[in-house]
Image 1 (tube, rainbow, N blue to C red):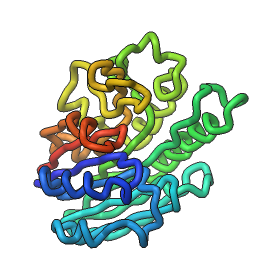
Image 2: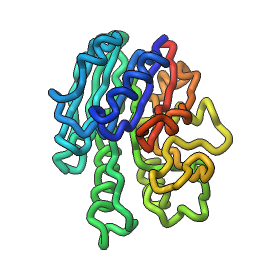
Image 3: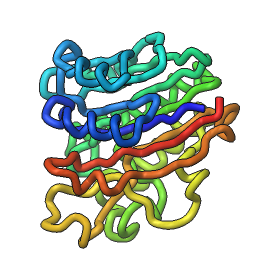
Length: 261
């Protein structure tokens, strides 16, 4: 068995201490970070290695984007893709010793206006998802896990108000449909919702709320998927809501799952 966590950390250097706290307190075997906002050579690997995380594959950019897979288990890098040719560090993949491939993805947020004719960033988001769909349809992945900040809350109970957010980027019908096409193309199973099928579930709360906890206007933007051939091995899914209340937190919290593989 191994335990995996995904977390949009919103600057790995600024929140190095929070990553170290999660590693020390929770000890996932594999931790996938998004929005690292750091070149790879500036990621504080010495701190992580001192906690037993001696392996890493990553793609980085100065002050923007960035994805990293940090692991206690050996990793074999299997590449990264520049979906939609944006020149962004938004995907990296690695293989574990048991042959399972982990894809760590950071889908573009998409700006504020859900109309590609008025908002270039929204068009880039849809194009990114379309290329993800086409890639996984062609690749037909097996024994694979896909995690990350996918920047879409697909279900009605993945947001605080379905009606209020229907025209808000991250929950619009066109985004939800694009994400569903990615999921179908790779025959991915939403492990979190397989484990926790009912009820409101969030992994992100805006910095704009004066009291994020009391307002509780969250969205489930962070996901763990597995290909159908191994999805039944996934269990023990949980979202660490208390991390949102840590000092100088990310606006996202870690999402966990364990796999008997």
